[in-house]
Length: 212
Image 1: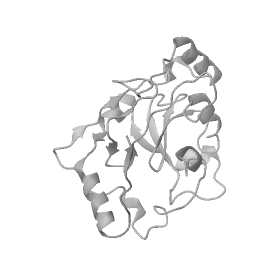
Image 2: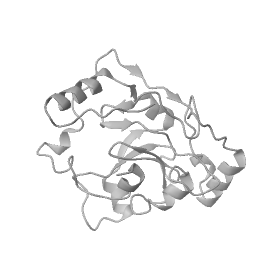
Image 3: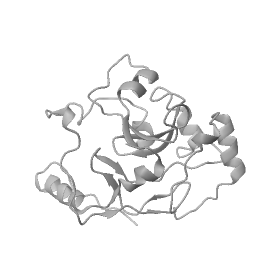
Image 4: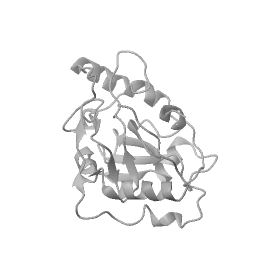
């Protein structure tokens, strides 16, 4: 299922229904050999003009203090080199951040955020799909500029929660600003490959070739 479709479907799945202590978080930490994640530009770079950013901020009524973040080392639509892991939250970034497009698209900030109104309030702006949820930035009110993780397979989620309740009860803090969030990310830690190999060896997963 495409991630842009899956992200719109709030559900309980393998994580929320697992027979584990849900309050324990992601689990053990990483080795000291882990390097910080780096981000690169997409192969087909589409330039984003200042007028497009200003139009987006005006459309979303984002105050100056909540300026839509540009990812350091890249910019609009950049992606991690390899993958980037927040070991504390179990948050895995493995695809490009949203960008600003002239037309509606599954990676367009304006379009995607119109589809996410039952996930978060307008005080938050979705900036990327990540494994297991959505990465959002607070653009209004207290703690403007802070980064949060909105999981969509969350044991705490339940029918009847509106966007305001989800924001209040479910969002997990990732950093007081975007730079703080990026500093938490480990670049392609070897533990991920170890876990993946154990899953394959145990018959829980299979290797799928990835084309260039």
